[in-house]
Length: 515
Image (cartoon, rainbow, N blue to C red; front, side, top):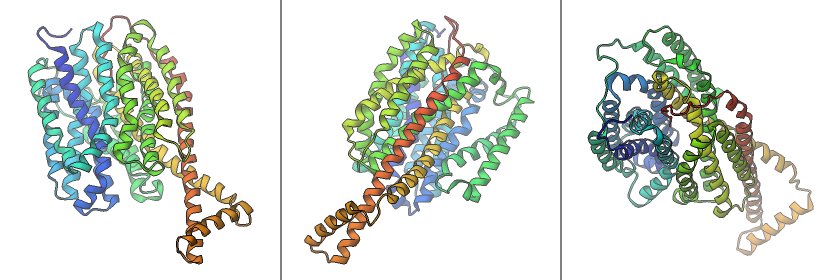
């Protein structure tokens, strides 16, 4: 039960602001890469580390969040993370070199992981049992809206103010959240003494293993996966590091990450589904902006506006699903949500070169509705049956699986998209024989058009062939995007049997749901 005198909604707003800062900064830098590259004199390959370093630092700290919260107290750790995130945002904004910016982004990721992991635990300890579903829906709306707000807000700031302000804007929001957290959050109940031994070797193995695997996922496509010695090394180090880490913590009396909670069937089954939800949330979400940029020629701001109705739908739907969970088995709602999500993704698999923002409206709105119906029930089904003393450790692992799911989804779908585009291009080229009368007629028409504009015959022919090649490339790209959506829909359907392994939350039991 919440402590007497606690303003629960002030707590909710305070922790939600902190978590929102972290989520927005995951995607907001994507729209500023070109401007940062020009300002810092870096190559595009080097600039990818500004994005990747944040994600790598995030996944390192996530599994440690339960231990850190217990050791230092949830309130102290959250406030420490909030102050650190705000200060590291300032460092990002004043960076004068690529090295300085990358290191500042690492700090942002480390502190941001603490914000993300602990915000919901604090939130659900503050609200009474009967209001937990409502609190979860409020927080879930923030979580789902974040990836949409990032590119939209970032595009506006970069266009009208400057790239440094995508970081400076965190300062006033961070200060406001800090004041509210200091004022509203209840005092900590210390669980682990400050003199308890720290397993530094386990922490080092975790950082090496998880960090290397995340680097493998983030940078693999850029470096052509196992064709790169660096990516191969990261994969090997990641696997070895995580295996050694597992053996280390399973043998520890007070592990920094309690993997023993995976003995609960609902948690490991829910974690597998959480990976899929992460892939659907971030993997499918990444494809639409790329399509809007490469096929529709939209700016980041315009792309953000395409995604905005879906975010609004999520915010409206969250409270509705929270009420449904009180009346129906969360597992049933989860299956319905997955079916709706898969259906929406198949609608997105019907893209054409002439697709407009209006064509994307309903598929994205339906997708958001189905996503919410998976997001809320999954946490309750996976974590509800777990004893209260193991919920914090379970939540940390559950967070990690969704984060990994997003990274795996982006890496997998990016690779599939590239391969399918090449496949479709080769098939289309085979059907464009130079002896085909229709092809000859098309080339002749294009050539004639360029000649009438003043180009000589040879130049006009080259330009006509270039236009034809561009048309082939465009059609191959569209078909490749459609393939990625079909594969995503199939993956959602194939993982539905794991729902049968989830537990049903006992009535009246308090649940700490995960982001």
